[in-house]
Image: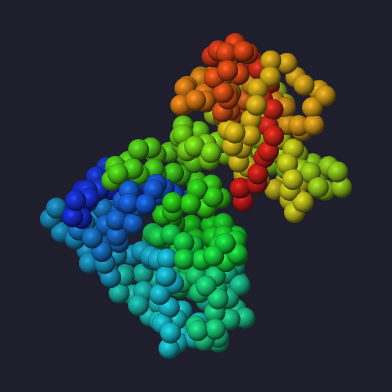
Length: 365
C-alpha cells in the first residue's frame, strides 16, 4: 500500500487552497464539498496541471519546492466530466491510443488477460468497433474509465465523472464505478459535490470548505459528524442474514463498530427493502436524521419495522431543531432531528436509554 502525501498551497486569483494531509494508498477517497471549495484544484495540483506545494506517492516525489514532474510523466490517470474521447477513432482506437501513451508516464499497461477483465467489467466488448459519435453519454464515460484503467496507473483521479450525465445515465454508470475495485487495487480520488455518489462509492472522505480541509476520515465516521441540513444522517454497513416476506424484505446485521463495548451479544439488525440482495451480501445503508424519531418505551403497536434500543450520546441545538447522536448496541451511530419541544417534553439528556424508530432505510449501493 502506497499512501499519497500532500502539502498543497495553491493560489488561483483570489482563491487559495491549503492542505497538508496523507490519503490512503488503497480504496476510494471522496473529495467532497460545495462548488468552489477547491476540489478540482486539488486534483489538478496532484496531476501536475497546477503548480503549488508538494505531492509524493510513497517515496516518489512528484512535486516539491525544488522540482516538479511534468503532468505527462506522472504515473496516474485522470478522468474528467467530459470523457475526452477522440472523435475520429472508434472505441478500440481510443483504448489503443491511451495504451500507446502509457510508456510516457513510466507505466506498464495491463496484460491482455487483465485488459479483457476490465472490458468485461465495463461491458465494452460489444462496443469496441462502434464509432464514438454513436455512444451514449454513459457509454462514453465507461470508455474513458477503461482507457484510464488499461494503462495500469499508480493513482486514479476521477473529477466529477458523472456531473455531465442526466439522472438515467448516472444510474447506468454508478454500478460500474462501484465494481472498479475488482480490477483496480490502487488508490482512487473521486471528486464530487453529489452526496449520493459519495455515499455509494467512498471508503474515505476528505471534506473541503473554502480551500481548507474541514474533516477527513472513514466515510461513516465523518458523515456522522456533519450537519448537512435535510441530508444529515449516517451510513451503516452489514451483511444480509435472511430474506423475509417472499424476498421483499432483507434482514441486515450491522457490522460491529470498533467503539462497541461488547461485541459478543446479538448484532443490531435492520429490515429493509432489498429484493435483489442475496444472503451473505455485504451492503451499505443510509439513514437520514429526519427519518428517525424517539420514544421512551418500545412501541409494539407501531407500523414502523425498525425500532432499536439506543443510548443518547449528545444533543446539539440546530436553529429551531435539535440534533441527537444515538449509540447503537453494535457501537455504531444513528442521528435524529427533533423539535426542541419534543426534546423538552421527553426530557431527553445525554446517557439516557431510549428507542429509535427508523421510518426509512435506503440502500446506498
